[in-house]
Length: 238
Image 1: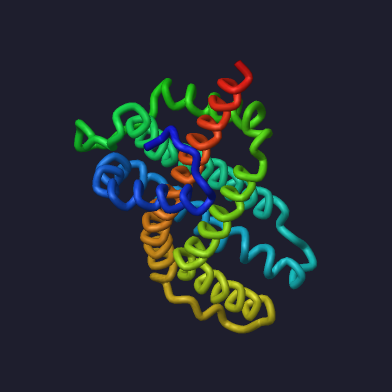
Image 2: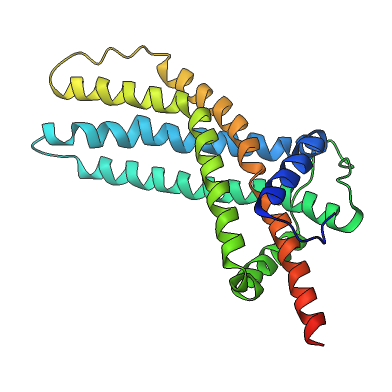
């Protein structure tokens, strides 16, 4: 039930229930976008570790730095990060679609096509409506929104840490390898390391996509609770 006042605990319990009970529908709706998200995540992380990180680590060892290479690596990494933000917004559209359907019909339907659900003009309207909500009635319920945001952020950070453990371990290995190379030691990285690194990031990114997808649902129920309270407040005034 969307229109209902809820405590913070109820918001997260209902969000978890909605996500787990409709995971099959969400997976069918989002798997192509999740693959795009995973590939962009892998590209952004791989460029940071393979191109930018070695330059930063070995920078103190060079008297004459190749600033052209530094600039090129920085621009590529920044472009990949921007693409990742767009991929995250694209992924969030699936959760927004599920929330829209659930609000209208009380259920999350199975997608009509095998290629899932892609955003349209409705998504832009929902994003704009969400932003307007934050700066109008949302400010009157700052405590609810802040608690929802903080708990969601904490939950997401912990799960993302587990998803990105391969990236963290490989990143540390790369830092040590390039730091040793700057000191005169052989690099010692096998030729297949780049492909293995990218593949590990793709798998981690795909799992991470479904960790991040759940973060929309607590705000959906927080919105429902605040909207119900606002309607009651207006009715009392009348």
